Length: 191
Image 1 (tube, rainbow, N blue to C red):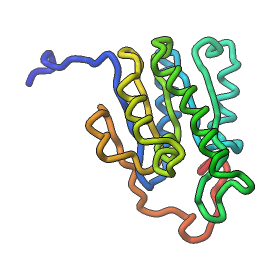
Image 2 (image 1 turned 45 degrees about the horizontal axis):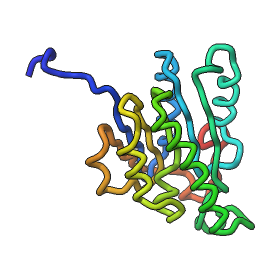
Image 3 (image 1 turned 180 degrees about the vertical axis):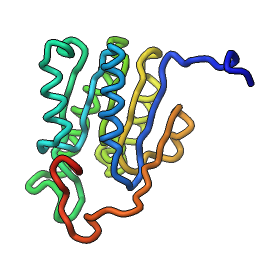
Image 4 (image 1 turned 135 degrees about the vertical axis):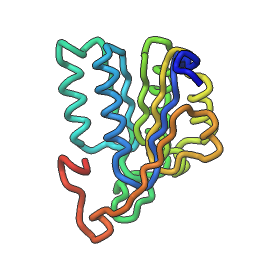
């Protein structure tokens, strides 16, 4: 097949999933690439309520003169759910579900509006896997997104039966992680 036979899609659905590190980092790289092309980007973060390097970075560039009209950022969620000692303390399952629903509404509105070139839903897969959001909502988000809006979905355990609805799906495979040796996450590397 000759290069001339290839076409470009109006938009794509990108998934970064798997047990390995780098899913959020890849989505931030995609954010940078899209902003570099002067796209409008909505970055919607599920689960993470604590300060992270990416949240500090996104908040700084969001209010800069360069990107203030091109970048929207929403951080929802109540922290890790059902993660043993790492779970958000004193947060009920209903509070986790309500936060996931509120965050989903932000993502759905941005993805279907036609006003954004790219909508990134960081950690949405965890919310679905943990039962905080119905898998049917994730499917609806993918199917209902605006035809010119690309969508990036991250988090562990992307549903295998939805892979057919994606254009690019990457499984981040862990070869080794220091957490398994009882070392905590490092600022600037892990969060």
